[in-house]
Length: 85
View 1: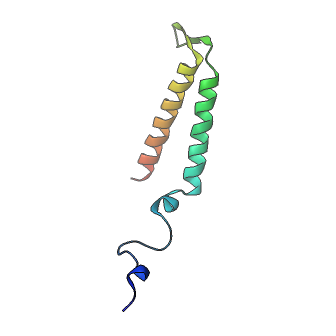
View 2: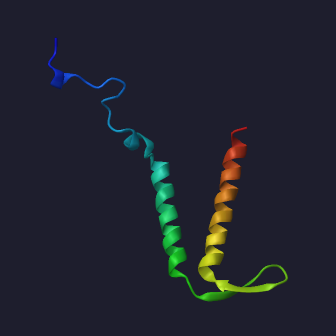
């Protein structure tokens, strides 16, 4: 019989925490790119004129950048989702 201090908890591996396993190089790269995009967006706050086909819209540059970031993320998600089928 082993002492209680030497018993390992059941259902857990000794290979580290679950978080360490989920931080793959591709996820770290994605997080760094998202952080850089957010910094870039926050640093560009002046108002700009943007032509949307016909109308010209004046808005803060960060809103236009944030909108393009969201649209790009949605396009990427759709491409990845479509590849799995």
